[in-house]
Image (tube, rainbow, N blue to C red; front, side, top):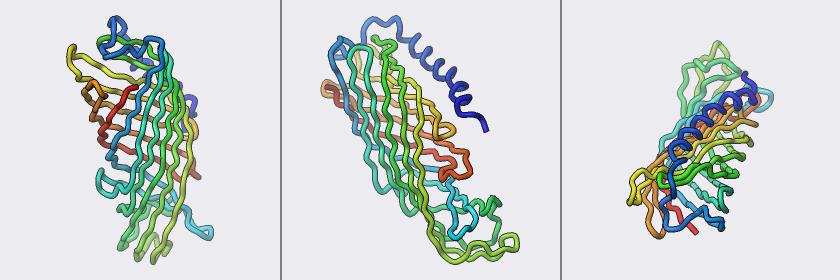
Length: 284
């Protein structure tokens, strides 16, 4: 397995390339077209409640009771299928070129279809009648410092550096009749298992907006970060289109978050949460 520090070091050129690309595009622009100057040395901020319709896919691990083997489960859901709860809010505050950024997400899926992929490290190849359901809930919290590398009529670009914490709790229930699994009846009848994970990761990235249409309110928000720590690797991407009004901004974007953990004792092997979001931003 690749060392986590090696992974972060290998990914730094990617982030540096993003920073250089956006920075080079905006560096010579004279002034960012806003109703007020957010880099005038005074305190400024924004709050963005948003709606997110994510699908989730991944692989999770559960331990059978009484010293039984480990069970690996593949999970997948589509947006709007069984999303039963969400609380989503982000914001920032800045003075001059320096600032702070925060993002809080809580989501819950329930009664999703799933399937076993392995039992005790061996692929599950039995003839079976399966009625397998899973649920997942959890939260993601991102806290980071900001430094504005450039701002002008074509937008702005912030360097982002901080941490993201994720907590995920999953459960799996089944009702099945195993006919044969390598001549061993390992799993039969019905049952229920649950597990959870907590992971903190250092992240680095870039965020901002591109405003190529002078004299209009149209803009393109963007966000990208990578990280490592308790997870082998993680990333988040967010890109969209928005329109600015005198009272605030609205935007439609697509958001993608991925986690991978390689340890054999980890509940979460990998997970990807992605889907469209609708954002309303209030500036103050």
